[in-house]
Length: 157
Length: 157
DNA sequence: GCTAATCTTGACATAAAAGTAAAGATTTGC
DNA sequence: GCAAATCTTTACTTTTATGTCAAGATTAGC
Image 1: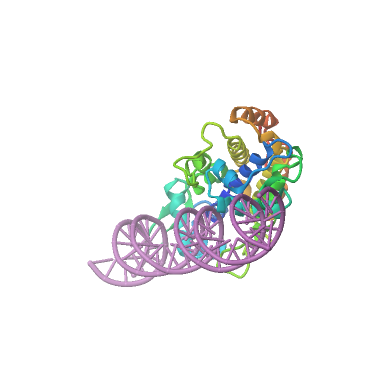
Image 2 (image 1 turned 90 degrees about the vertical axis):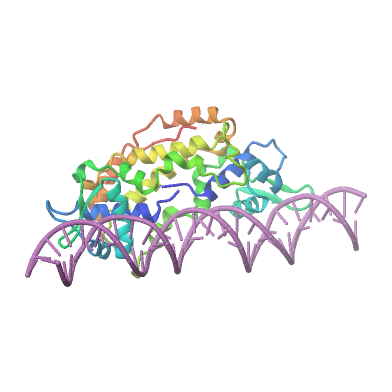
């Protein structure tokens, strides 16, 4: 179970924008420089995020990117759903075995685990907004563990 | 956030073995046939699982694989840790940007989220054993949702 | 001891994800 | 209206994950 590069860097770029003051924006080279990725790569990520309606892009001199909605209203669950190509809803369709369709269709003991894990992850991410990720690691970590307090989340098997 | 093919099929193969009676075993072609993957592919997975001590392999005619421990004592968290190459502990080291090391070292608002998610997933998986995954999807799903009952797991931010 | 069945291992091939490049489109400011 | 700055889009390259192959090693049974 892992986070893809697209998910991680896409989210990082959004956090950059969330940290801006009202009216401010960042260009691709600025975003790329702060994240240690190439401007071309940042461009691809921002294109995705723009299509999905998370950011607003302005072209031309004085152009750049800014958030399309207040950072406190953008939940990580929405962002990840875009950046991971809606994995939670398409997993069982992207079968790679040697048969025509998944041999487990109809009676699959693993599916509830996979679906359940995604639900748990989505649920946890739905409780975090971009606004909460602005700031230093120490602050973010402190807040994260407060939320995690209600631990003991389970996957129904 | 997604489950890799190695994680999914490795886990499936283990569930096959967990469903066996005492003294029974399965050969690579048998395991492969039931999962809809090639015998070569199954061989690689079982090799990993054997190295990690989850299964016992017997060579030669009448050979095959069986679980090395009772299925009720093998937790999914241990299995996934092997199959995903210990992602939870190595994520920040496998940096792929253009700099020498992660630009976020020392002050990274995203890290608590990534680490926290992995913790939540591991925690949920630690409450499921192979024994619980044996049976039909309906039964497994019912049990899964019972565990998930204590919902509202959070990632501390 | 020979043969057939089976696991083991490393090298190789294929497919998917990640990242790069280049040409096009839009806007600002002169 | 021209030039510079910027985003957009598609095609391509590289890297990583996945899957295959073939030769080797081990065991059972004859």
